[in-house]
Length: 284
Image (cartoon, rainbow, N blue to C red; front, side, top):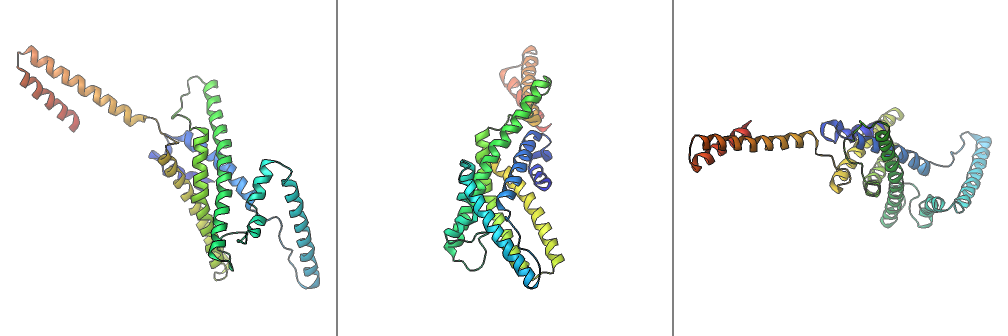
């Protein structure tokens, strides 16, 4: 999560110090996303380790327990309303029924249409989780900023809070496309590299690529949010200075005109003086 925040701040002007409210919203939504995706993508059970008949018996017992647990979970999710239906719709069991890889699109032994089916289903899963997390996280962060304003009347927001549905839509698009493609690519690379790399080298690769992935994810969301216009920075200091410069320019031109008129100079002299003043102001 820290790497994603670093990527988010690095993509904003001045390292996001003028947009800390947007960074905070990203942190809240990202935390919810991490929990939800880890919960949905994590395996339900691990095979028991061991050798000989005892190990085989333990593995068989673990497999039976896992199958029973999976059946119980699936039966339960059908009775828990929208959340259960969503989990069931994008579950590995659904992918298996569709003849697609249950995990990632690069699992061996599948045709191209089956791999594209996995990509589409995982994209739907990621987009759905992104939208839900975006709604909850943006609502929560906006509510906290509103409460801060009520508690401290002197506190002013740096920027207008993002719209809940618009920001959630941006998160859905980001997760369904960017995060999904990066998830598939990393898992495919893992499947290729794990058999050929020493364990320590593979662990180093895993840490490095996942850290870079989180930074890239933070950066890509900021780019998308800017492109969609869901996180619009306020005018800021630069706009204020530009406005002040224009006001000074107009005031200087008026002063030149007033001095020229007092000295009895003609319209051409007045206009020339105003042009000279504007050029001087622009050079400054």
